[in-house]
Length: 254
Image 1 (cartoon, rainbow, N blue to C red):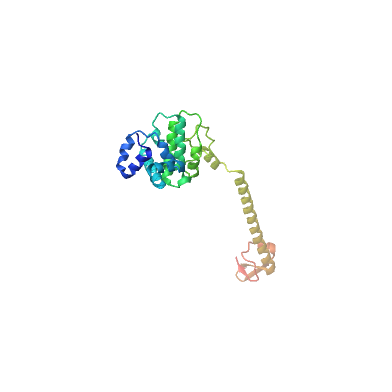
Image 2 (cartoon, rainbow, N blue to C red):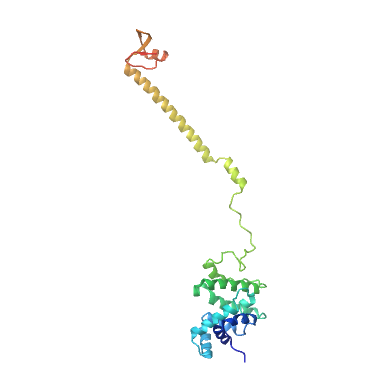
């Protein structure tokens, strides 16, 4: 009579070097019991506890150790990852996949290593189920929530064959064209700036002219020295006409 898979798992815990041999052997027919125990199925765990006489936590630890060593080892083919012998129907493969995900789901155990193994299970299921036309999206919810897969990626990590949305990034030609041709706002700002500068210049001239007139009126008289010892009193117009440098109550030589 063949051993139950849990007995093989308990033996593997005592003799870890058997792992290499187990990887070369076919998967036991009842390996789904180990997967269910690892996923927390109490009914199967109690049955295997009665069969082995071991505590439930020991039974579960042995089951998980066996699954990692004999199914989820590096380089395992997709069918092996799912615990299949290679000739099972799709329904059996789907059942294995669901129980494996229930065990490895990050919301269940919160283990980063287990979540990475879940990604392997998803990829293996995609390869085994390559002929199926109906994608199964339920397995990817945990990966999307944990950020291990981006929305829009399929189970192989590839983008679906959908029409890509138009790019919002401007081309080099568009950028150069925009740089050469200023927009309406720039033109308006330039005109307003020119008007402001012109207005300020006019105000400065007016202030200077007003200051000269005020000085002239305050002085009241302008004395123009034509020669040493000679002076002429000029009017406001004559001061401007003669281009006096200073108008004051004192005599200033030109």
